[in-house]
Length: 327
Image (cartoon, rainbow, N blue to C red; front, side, top):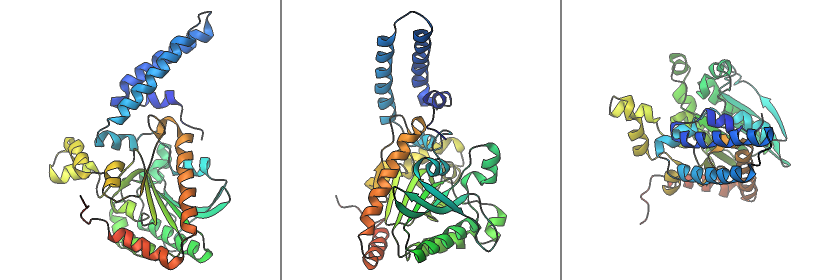
């Protein structure tokens, strides 16, 4: 898949993007006139493009937490499958948990990028309606988390670092998943990821919801894309519990402090990875390249740390979370 067409992303735009969509429409009209007639409109087009850039920066610089949640869910935002295609030089998918089945909501595989070999684990949402249903919209069953842990233990055996891409509204909440040990599978992943004797890098690329995200979210470095979110519960779920009203989701998003800047300030993530102007859905290749560069930087840093020190730092990193911040 190539990078998202800005015009297509505009057409599927969110409510706060409507002024930007209108301005983009004017630019597109002038481009057609410029190529289909004798009129010389290059200067006008450049002025409008500059205005669009400034207006986009202004709009995205003032987004509310709820608006950022909606950007994280944008249909054109790059998914794990896009990162696999655009970021990696080679990828061999590994299937199944060797107990129940192969959960399509989590993809695992051996990856190569710029000469660096590692194991990739990520939530898979799917693009078409059929694929999204098959992947449960990125909501994994317990066999998905067991598959992830089994492959991570395999990477540890081979001395390969691990990279995880987090993008899920939460673990699958169905009866079957609970009967097969959903909570136990997630808890075991969290516990055992602390003991993996290889570097682990985690990146929230879209939605980071509840235990479904934490099941592959324990790492030496945890990063978030600028317009992603990471939370113990979705805003809708929080609103339903606290206010018994779905229209309170924006209030819940604000109270949860789930944006990348909030979590960086609170010390829950290590770095916010900036997105291209107007969000990753406007420039998929640009967003992927920034994530690629950050992952390579982190893997290089972590490769130099002795294993005992690596494990100690990972443990202390998570132990410090939740402690009062110094003024």
